[in-house]
Image (cartoon, rainbow over all chains, first blue to last red; front, side, top):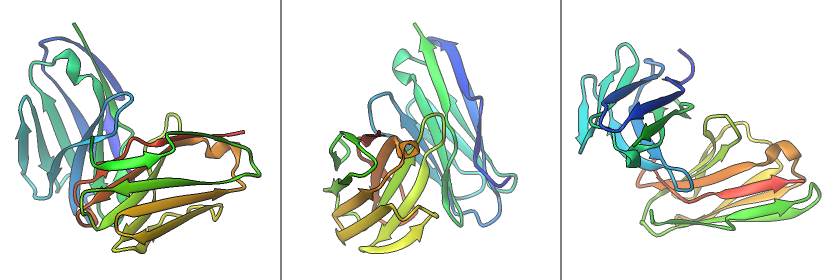
Length: 109
Length: 112
């Protein structure tokens, strides 16, 4: 993988559902993996930074895991709420700092 | 409020104009970044400054000229832009290069 990829591109879930999405990144020359949340009309907001294989981070109902050997990270949201609606970006810091295209999450009340 | 401000928030310019975007961070960070987000594309890193020195230039055309007079201020000077340069330009800062970045609200640029 030469670029940072995210899937799915967009996602609609009902309030209360749990969901997850994926970030794939080059596993060579890896330094750190960042997750950001970008709400419409606001600035991207940092969620997590992970550096070590097997890292897990949690912030309220949101958590993330990291696999540096195979080059992927999962972001999980438990019990989605309408205020979770945003685009979730991952960014890989290796030789360069590269953002993925994002997963646009819509949580329907 | 992230501690990173950008002005102007919106800018319309002709292809022959010269304008500048300004970014200021009040976080005591040492690294600052310019990003471009075009419609339906990922955020693209343009420039990185560390302690006022440019450390990355991701093949950005010379019609974009960055300036970092000190660790708190970052400018992007624009001249003879093209319509395809219309985009959202985001500034960010971090304590050190590669660490968590704090983003400004962006400048939405339209080139006519």
